[in-house]
Amino acid sequence: MAAAGLGAAAMTSAPAEAGGTTHGDVVGTARGDVVGTTLGDVRGTVENGVRSFQGIPYAAAPVGERRWRPPRPAAPWPGVREATSPGPACAQPVGYPIGVPSENEDCLHLNVTAPVDARGDLPVIVWIHGGSLMYGTGDLYGPDRMAAGGAVVVSMNYRLGVMGFLADPALGESGGLGLEDQQAALRWVRANAAAFGGDARNVTVMGESGGGYAVCGHLASPGSAGLFDRAIVQSAPCATGSSRTPQEARAESARVIEATGCDEDTAACLRGRSAAELMAAYGTSAEPRPVSGTRLLPVAPEEALRTGRFNRVPVLIGVNHGEERGMVLGEELATGQPLRPEEYEPAVRERFGARADAVLERYPLSAYPSAGEALAAAGTDSAWSAPTLETAELLARWTPTRMYEFAEVDTPWYEGFPEPSFPVGAQHMSELAYLFDLELFEARTPAQDRLADRMIEAWVRFADSGETDWPAFRDDGHEPYVQSLTSGTWQRTEFVEDHRYDFWKSVG
Image (cartoon, rainbow, N blue to C red):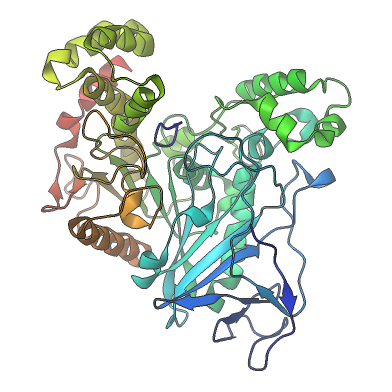
């Protein structure tokens, strides 16, 4: 799904300082802001009670003949590598506000943030950024507060769009190199977490939107087995749309091959094209996903969950109460005016086709303050709420599962954007303003800070123990338990009724 619905410094080497570590020492030794890793020493920064290390290579540059090939280990470096600036953004087109337009392919770097007093026993949270698997960078999401809350937080850049998900027989079978990059980062974490004060035996993989769909992929991929111990899936219902079929992938590659004129000697031709040419051929309307029926992903995540053939770890899964409010408001910003009442029915018919009459009856315009809010409600329930509940149902059959709904009404809007025509509420991405520091959003209020602290505490607790302060999804054996997260009292929400789950299950 489209994130929010709206439309690097060079590394240097220096001699190892006295008291620092040298490559070959026991991983986990550190002094000051220098840490020894399996590939060499890195120097970070210390500020506000946390240590930050940015732009650490976790895999070799996938350039030239290595383009569209699985990631390989990065080369060791001598001395102390400066790790005070993020690595380059992976190649991505102009698009969402969370994107960083780039043609750089030497981008497989990660960032680590940890409390200054971390001693090797803290849970490790590996954050996979969203952006429809087309846009974004790991360093956009400021993790200092989460780290200060008692976790080592790792984020990474991984191949996106055409560079990470193009699949053609000429290029090999993966069709999910972005996912393979993330696996390489997770292997790096297992090997190096202790160096930064984390417990390498307690790793939680966490993602939102496109990053959440990547977590769905890791749950289903045999190659991810043993690389993580818990999973957090935000705004990404694994039961729908988390992978592509081989047929869909071939159709997509045929379009790119035709646009680039690479119908002969395809692999060499595509590797000879610039990143800009390839991104233009791929376009910005694609929703890249890993390809099922491959070595990386033998079955689609929804089938893996249905049959129990997945990496069974405790899962925290959630959705926002008004996911599509941001999508509708984004369309309004693009057109320059709110959705008019007379446009509501045509919009519903365009989206829901044969189901439109039933949808219009269940979501009548008269029940909502505006046409935009009515369309957002129908879109949220159909594409997000119902499939997320279904995903939790599937997970809970096989593994400990907890579910939340972020339902805060007063949330920050995007910094510098025109005022929305209706309250944004718990739109897509809005919970991220509470879990991370993001310049993308307006500054939080003191009340929002309090909710942020409480959410971070819940997320870190789950990463540490697999527990939350609310019951498991099927704790009582009857109705599913979904916890509502707001600035008020946290309590069970009547999710099934609120989002008309039975209706959407009946119409498909």
